[in-house]
Image 1: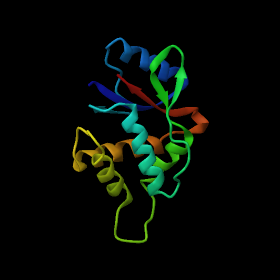
Image 2: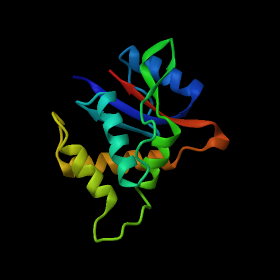
Image 3: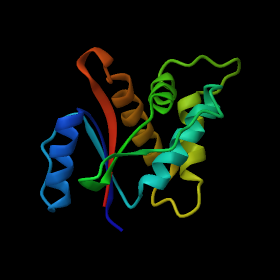
Image 4: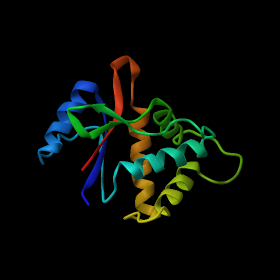
Length: 146
């Protein structure tokens, strides 16, 4: 299995980045997280877990096709972007850390190629990306999956 890259970009920049990745090239560094061994399905699982954790379950966390020009580029829906960003600041009643809980649950999903410690790093990075999405700059969160 290849990898999945999650990144912040404008629509046009996302299409360009996807084109480079589709051709096997290396996309420029920047606001991106590359996660080996997962697909867009596991990203949707993360969105569902994040939504439930911040009490925003039931929203549509299904990734959507961005453009017919690229089968591998998907957009993260606004509800999922908010839920992921909320993981950084969400207050819980107990002792638990919601971001840690989501990372542990995500790592425990079937066939995940990493443990809870690595999952925490990925979830933290993705949450920070989601927090950087800016409507005024017309940026969004995108997923490219090989």
